[in-house]
Image (tube, rainbow, N blue to C red; front, side, top):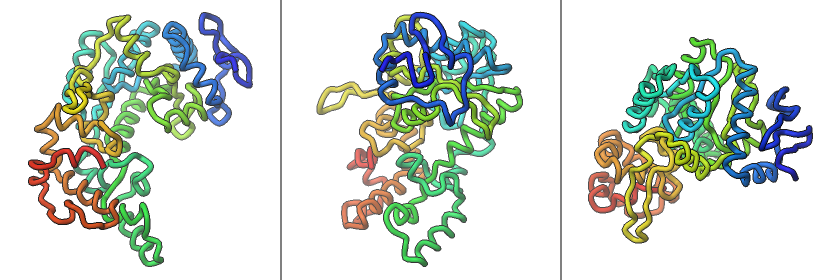
Length: 358
């Protein structure tokens, strides 16, 4: 299939021209692509992808009254900001500072604010990460794992009590009855504060530096909704001009246009066995464990790049013990070294790598 065409007509001619869809975006229910089309778009060269992104930006800006960029201080949103400023230098830039951002990213966001003279707004939460953890649970094993997403601990307890009474407390539910897991921190620390700032500014559309290549979830969202759609519950349009880009495209753009980026991406270490350079690929929240089931997750890398903060998290804030409980629960209560001794400090001294991945 031609990557510039879908079932409703031409989408984009990479070296010029607009398609019918670009001037009349549809609602998200009917705005969808085939996987083959995404793959073909992702195979385009950087020049074509730059045109693709600028086309989407231009059309979105023509339809929106008060747009903003959801800025994370990461490399993707920084590249998108660089492109957006070529269209609208005074665009609102809303930086979501969750309170647990990497310090290198916070400093970079504020440096860029001054260096580029941005129309900058910093969204801060009304509660702390530690309050969310105590009331809802830890962000572990991905957003689809936690029961109810933002269910309060009292609701969770009732839910699990009812399951146990019916003899249905098994599998994933049995694990979560023992270990408090939740994605509520995203809601309280990132989404609600940013939405509050956007509402105060009268924002009617948000640009995000999200790419389909980042995860299966984002790929499926792009295939279902596309890169330009309206969220009815928020009365907002959302635009993803970098949807068909890859990490390699981002770095190529940074090198070509000499775009600054957060120093976090240069922090890492050489693997002792392979000699491979392992570094932070994403910025995100410093204490998030959503990717802890993947190798070289950001908590594992943080153990080497930010050892003091990592130890505080594991020992003083209690994540180490929670991970030991989670490992024990996942192993169906089989006896192992975690079950024999629950001294986090001892494991930190003797086997720190056991906390790198679940």
